[in-house]
Amino acid sequence: MARKSLIKVKPKKYKTGDVVKVSFMIMHDMETGLRKDKKTKQLVPIDHISDLSFDFGGKTFTTMKVWETLSVNPVVSTYMKVEGKGKLKVTYTESNGATGSKTKKIKPKK
Figure (cartoon, rainbow, N blue to C red):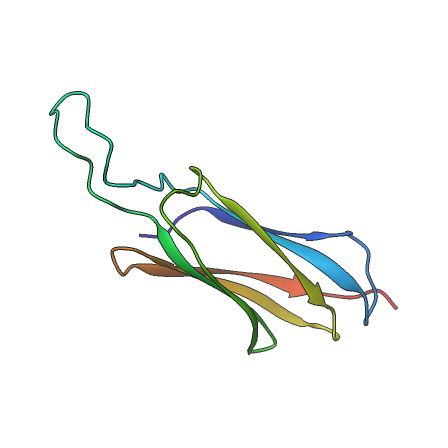
């Protein structure tokens, strides 16, 4: 299932060699498996983001293991050294095995 997600890079203006903050936000309920459905009184099945991978130019620079206790619609951040133009890609895996990704073009100023 494709989920809405967003990648932000700060500062907005950067040059090759700069270190930037990369934030990834994904619209996800992050179900722990402990909450009961109000109507059916049954436990809502576990469903959360379990792994994240940050890649630039086809090379992984950060991976994260995520637990179900992270908030709804989580935002995770890391830092990256800009090594020129390329594509930044964040790939996620859900606890049910589903995967997805989001990409952003990185275009440093001269």
